[in-house]
Image (tube, rainbow over all chains, first blue to last red; front, side, top):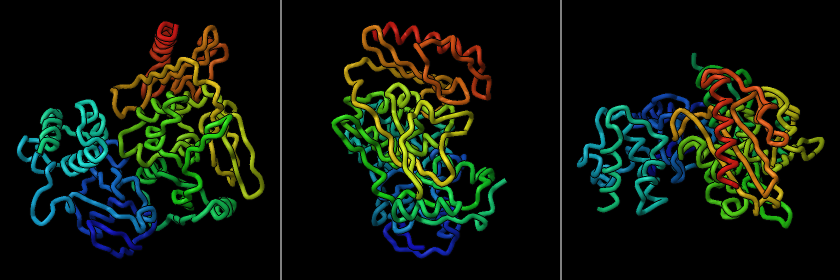
Length: 149
Length: 258
């Protein structure tokens, strides 16, 4: 099966029902994609599929055929962090790090949809991504700062 | 325990006739996967043969007709949230979609999947009930429209044969002048599954009320009469709490729409 991951065409030999999450982590070694709950509640496994925020734990590989997938590994360009990544770094938006890849991808999808989001839009856009460390305030602040850059 | 992945068959249908043909061979449909894949990961997906209908583009549209607005079964929650006609004439659809899961679930989950998953706690069914929705069921043999209020027959049982696919949902355009009210009560505002979900419409003395999460099926209240229901105890709440919340919401609905 063919999928495009972070701009590179990959050919994958796995059963069609395989979870995209497992294919990314185990077949392609993209371990920035985290497994949290495995049931679409926590957002740790978030990726962008054709630009749309998606929980990769709920996607059978067959449904990703010919799609273009972005994981956290594909976000920095030419060794330079994306504005959202840099803002998370600068404003303490990450602690243990498990939610961070999904949180950053969710923030990028949010900014794509709302280039100048209100606090409520930020909260709603990230509501599917759970963080058990930060209390969220520094994450919201990082998103605000990323937009201002 | 996790499922043994190679034991599962999953094929893609390119169009509706092909999907229907596969259903008649005993395959079951998977669309956005937001329910099916949860069971799969938990090792609780008993059926082994599946057909992905996600790429059937003819089932993903919102069509505006003179008498109805028709939603293809693969319309996602995000599609519903972005629809101007639904926002204008069926705002409870938009409210329900916005309160279903997070953005990632809304991007993937479909209205048809939500209906046939038949969770009593789903957020869209009460809105569909008050809007007097009908659903279209199609198989290789036949096609028919069913009133949604008679579609759910008991917990996870529906007026639908194994080879039928729910293809479209039709909403009559006669409620846009009514007052619309929607509340979902859960453990937290974002992401949580409902304890009580309330949809109401009002025009003068006329009211239409439906509830989710209080019974084995979503309930349309005849004459908006709460005494007709017997709420359930389950892992998310108790019957007593649900009844009290339903009464409070009814009072709020009647006040807000007065």
